[in-house]
Length: 355
Image 1 (cartoon, rainbow, N blue to C red):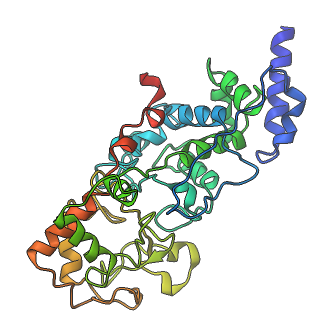
Image 2 (tube, rainbow, N blue to C red):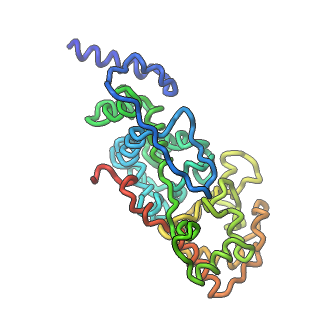
Image 3 (cartoon, helix red, strand yellow):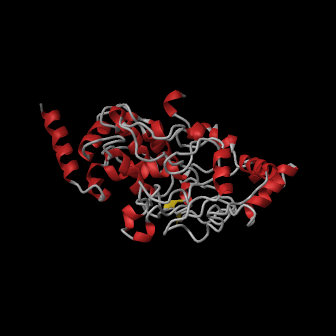
């Protein structure tokens, strides 16, 4: 009876804390643990500086915890859906269907974006509504067509009562008393380690392999006005951390960035996805309308559709690239050099519950 009283007293005080006040939990720090080990990541020289917040340093213990949370359906209302249900490693941490399924077989409204090199991004989701990985990690948990949980009290209580998580939180954050901020921080830490930088293209940059004639011509098409790809997908990350209307439609069913900013100029505007591992991440675009790389190349070769908000960078709208069949094949050959098998098969990123 006494033990039960103290347990519920602690839980009551815990849930009275603001979810963004970790100091609130200092009085419960009764677990014994060493200092978490900082992860020293060697970033490619062709990449920009990462967005690693000082208040959430990447540690081995935090990444391990985040990896478990990423793959665990415990965060969903009915224990059936995890982050990895829609963000599958074999598809570049995207999905291979047009719209992913959430709790109760609810169907998503947009194609699942990949989670590749997200440490170097400042906005997330197709419309950029999330401005940090911590913020982005929270949205699916309570989205009614994704994990569909009701509140943090339910989520935290479930984690607190599990057989593994109090110890993992102790190792990562020095406390067995779990709070929502720690959940989000851990998932964000794991996602910041998902770096892809060992494709054939990267090996070619490092002088380790040679390109074929087709791949070399494809690169020239990509990186010049011949293909006009590099403006929105510059070499390095192969995305520009910005938003564009790329001429998909004349009228918009999905208003894109406008739903966040309310700016009419943002209607039909979406965040540029990375082209790294594009071989694995079909279907393509925010609505998954294209199933193959050939369809995408043919769309741009045709020229796309004009509209009031189409990006000025889309110089070939209504005209097209006018690439020959050989040039289209060469461009595709180059895009396939962005495939990183070591990333797709990295066991450090895989499901810990299957090991």
